[in-house]
Image (tube, rainbow, N blue to C red; front, side, top):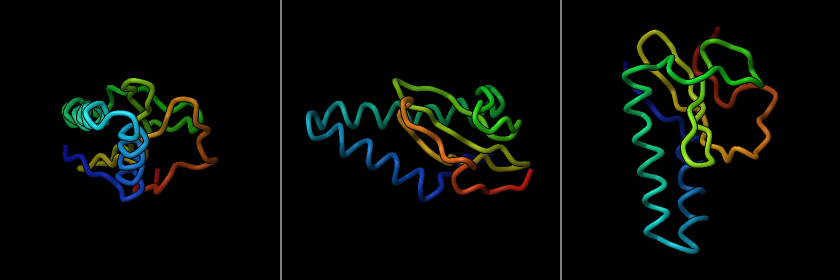
Length: 102
């Protein structure tokens, strides 16, 4: 299974890096590295994350790293990282940048 990042998810990751880097460039890079390494788990076991409670769809899942939610969508041959959000953030009513119809 291939893991791809949407543009909005990459922007989320960059925003996280920039926010943390105001205090520590080292810690900002460490957080980004841990978030991106979670893609190895997602690649190997795409259904290992839990279903996103707000969406109740089997193809939209999430894993947690630190206080962040990696929200992703599983399709036949590609898993799309849709968003990387702080756990306290409110999700939109529909999944961000859906790539595959249910």
